[in-house]
Structure formats: C-alpha cells, structure tokens
Image (cartoon, rainbow over all chains, first blue to last red; front, top):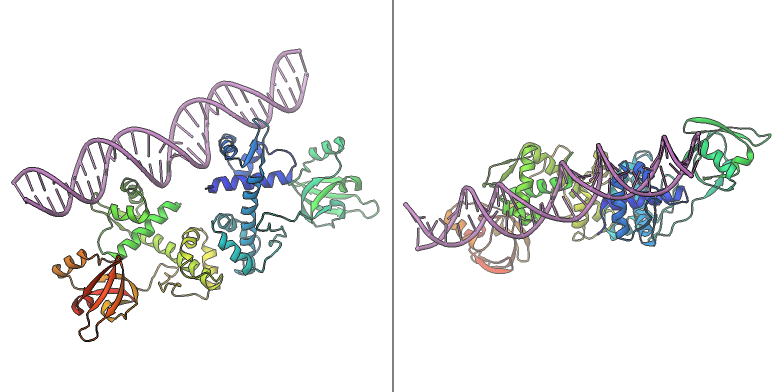
Length: 217
Length: 217
DNA sequence: ATATTATTTTAGGCTTGTCTAAAATAATAT
DNA sequence: ATATTATTTTAGACAAGCCTAAAATAATAT
C-alpha cells in the first residue's frame, strides 16, 4: 500500500520534472512540499527502495515507470474531482484546489470510474489542464510560443526551445525558468518585442527571445 | 486540529453508546476499531485530555458535548456521501460503506454544505439512517417492537424495554444485545411468538419477549 | 588549484498511533 | 471472603514522517 505522503511526493516530483527537464533536486522538492531537505532525503530513500523513483545521491531523482503511473493516477483523480466541484457543486475554479488535494487520495478504482462517467468523460479540468486517462496516458500540454500571446495573457513557462547557452543564461538570470508564471504587459506590433512580468519584475524581450519561450496554451 | 484516527474513535464511541446505554468499554472499542485494548487505552487518554470524552479508569468512556459534536459531524458527512454515491453515482447501497469511510474525513465545511444542497437536503441516507443536520441535531431512530416485524425482516436491536433482570439475563444469553442484527424467520399468528436468528443461531421468542425488544424501523 | 559557499546527507530526536508482555484492578464463582 | 478469571492499564518498543544541527559533498569564485 502507498501512503498519502508518498503519493504527494510522487505527484510533486512529476510536476517538477514536467517543468524542468532534469532530475528533480532535493531542495526543489523540499520547497514544493513545504518541508525540510532532510525530510525529503528520508522520503526519497523510501521511494527509491520501493522503486517509484531512481535516485543518485546528490544529483536528484527521476520517476520510474511505476512511479509515474502512481503520480498520473493521483493527478487524474485530482483533476476529475476539480471538475466535479466546479461543474456539479458550483465551486468557482479558484476555490477547488485545496479540497481536491484531499479528495485525490481517496482509494477506490470504482469511485473514479463512476465519477468520470458521471462527468461525461471530461478531457480537461476547469483550469484547462488535461486529465490523464485510466491507463495514465495524458495529452501533452498545448505548447505555444510566448511570442503569440496577447497583452494581458498570463501563462506558465513549459520549456525553452533553443538551447543556445547565451540565451539560457539570460533567461535564467531574469528568472524565466519552466514552471514560472509569465505575464505579457505590452507588445510592440512593429518589431514583435514585448514587455513581460516575471516574479513581479518587468523585462523587455525581443521577438527572437519570445519565440524561444514555450508556454502552455 | 483533529486527526483521522481521533475522528474514527469518536464515531465508534458514538455508535457504541447508541447501541448500549452505558459507558463504552475499552474492549468493546478495541473490537469495533479492530485494534488492541492497549492501543485503545492510549487513545482514550488523549481524547480525554482534549476533552472529547470523559473517562473513568477501568469503567469506560462517554462522549462530552464537544466530542458528540465531532462524532455527529463525521456521521453527517458519511451519510451525505453515501447518499451521493447511491443517488448520483449509481452505487448499490451495499458498496458504499467503505468509500464513505474515507470520504467522511475530508475537511471542508463548504464542500459539505454544497453537497447537501446538491442532494436536495436529504433527511436519511440510503440505509434509512437519519442524517444529522449542520448543528449536529439528529432525528431519533424510529424504534419499533420486534413483535411488529414480518418474517424476513432484518433489523438492528436498539434497546430493550423492560428491565426485568430475568429477561435481560435471558436476552444476554442468546446474544440479543443492542447493536446486534436480528432476523425474523417465522411468526405464529395465533400466539404472536416468533422464530428469529441472532448470530446465525435460531431462537423461539414468546410474544412477551418480542414486545420488549426494540429494533430500528 | 584552492577556498568559499551552497546543497545534500547523516545522526539523533520527536510525535502519532500501533503493538506485545507484564502488572494492576475488577468481576465472578466457590 | 477469597481465589480464580477477565478486563484494563502500564511499560517498553516500533514504523512513519517530520525536525534541527552537524558533516559530507558539489559548485563557484578567486
């Protein structure tokens, strides 16, 4: 049997490894889980023994196929419950997260199948995030160039296209890392440059740069 | 904050004290919670310190008003979820208990209010048990004399009317204690006596006896 | 290349909720 | 009234999941 804490770790690891593309580091995980690095190390060892993750000391963790299945099952449940709360119980989409965090841990295959059916087999949750299917298959997030967004748009950085190390260094400096929220403040039509805000700081990005940042649609 | 284990203990204490009318004993609780007496003693001490129960060493426990409120809130949630599972998700009434045992611990006042509304403010759950209201008020179970039941009827002993010690001794001997399930096998119209089954054993009860056993309607 | 800084791990400890075995108390039978 | 039996409590231990402080390792800057 898998514990609630283990499920939450696997879910977090999944999300963090979607955001970046490297191994998930202890401190990242500690921040995401609102806990201390030492506690994360303890849990990592356990998850590794149970073969939910592969772990190289000092170099972070990666989900195994087995671990990914668990993570996706939890995410599936989370997103189905969020859909239920919004569609059936008339919650607004910003109220649902906390409750779904609890509901996602209910263990009953039958319940989730029935819920899915009751909701009409939805493909995305109220935030627009895709709902993994029974087998843990998930439609890749729609990736779009930041350059295509209109002013006012708020989205999350999914990846960076070009791997020019100059560019990466620059993006890193301004905090434009995968997982970060980026908002388009203004966009100059004549050259395609834009002013954006990241971490509440403003930056001007050339068209070249904004075409290399991929955000979720 | 109250833990999941604490909630379950309080719920069990509530149910056991409904069945009998005396203090709930350590062993009773241990059996109900599927745990050992020593563990129960530990938990009892904690619940007593937190003033959810009053506890006299060696003589069992009773819920305080505070503890009763918690127990009834859990029971309210349990029964609302059971209603949801049966009415909306098309579970059959015998499949719902296990899932409701998990769902009853979700912490969200708003969720339960919304769910209640969504279900049309039901007064009883799919088993016919009354659903406590927001304030923990619960309609007393309909009590009916065993003598009035028809053959085939299956119900739970709620109380024993007469306190004739001869009768009590007899009832105790055949296992006819509050909380026990009793089934009417056959009923003789001419004298009102009946054959019943308790704990898979059969007994003949005179009309006098069956009029003194109260079961839930 | 080495010293400093940042990250991660280890060591040892705490709480919750459980357990077994032994001791204490209550109930029952003679 | 006392001995036997049943119940309950205490004592001591363990796993899960967290913590702090110290040690080990890796990354970075000079």
